[in-house]
Image (cartoon, rainbow over all chains, first blue to last red; front, top):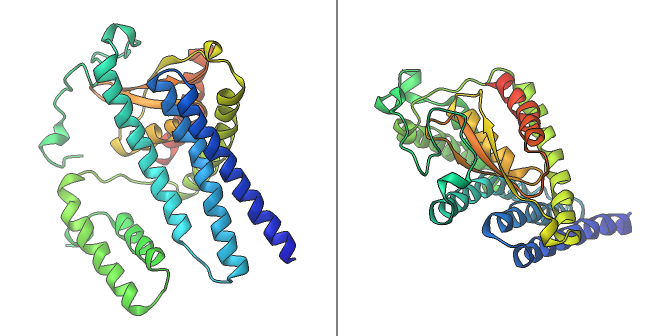
Length: 128
Length: 162
């Protein structure tokens, strides 16, 4: 039984290592900023996720104490990764992309970096 | 009165649960401290969050989370495959415009986050009126297919939740 637990935990650790490596390798290999953005936002998610699952299993099965910290780290990671990716993408577009090169918004307004937003009624206070 | 005290009840509950998970020990003192945090933080931040999103069906939320987690796992293998085995010149990166039917800011935020976490796509920008999302696709041939999948798989489910 102990052997089985160790094998499962090692499996998740190996998965974590492989995906962490692929994420970092992608940063080196891909050609431009937007492409490189894909590598850390995804490959690393499973990389970190695998390490966290392994840690959770270790504490639950070997140390026999439940630990919720890993779950919290996962949640924070899922909240922060898209936000920072969005920031990086916007900064990149602001600095390096031309408005003509982007597809149309299919809307009366342009993309947020290039066009002012209409004034929203909710900007003046709650009135939903 | 209740609204003044707890502008976002679900938010307060989340804060209490997160606090308990953070200290990793359930005692009366921790519960009390969590409850205080759960009341003070939403009250202070309420001016920045005037709206009141309603979650219509909690079961759908679970279904959505399950779909997204599964897609994230698939996305990881997919992107790892592209990084490791595809030549740089064969990778076709494209911009995709996804027009939105969703209007609530919370729903759009979740959709944008989901797009970033799932197969080969990163949400990069909103249009100025918040009516469409600019998505960067790492490797795709058919931009319409990507758009339709996002709309069908995620936006349809989010519309049922909000």
